[in-house]
Image (cartoon, rainbow, N blue to C red; front, top):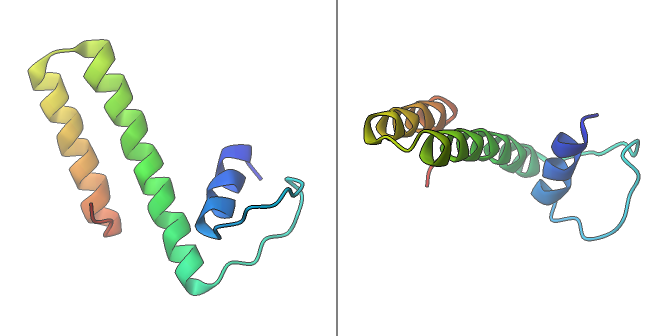
Length: 79
């Protein structure tokens, strides 16, 4: 499993201990939903960092907001 994905899964589980990346994780339905929301938020944050600081133009920043809103709406992630 990808290390970033693994860490997001642990975060969704509110897990505080140390485990190996090869550990099998079992998520409840609510943890699975939280996991999916964390992935969408991670995508949105990545888009924000790229467009907000690298490009610095309002029109491009507005476009990144549109992309974020589209992803959030598609996956049903609320603010």
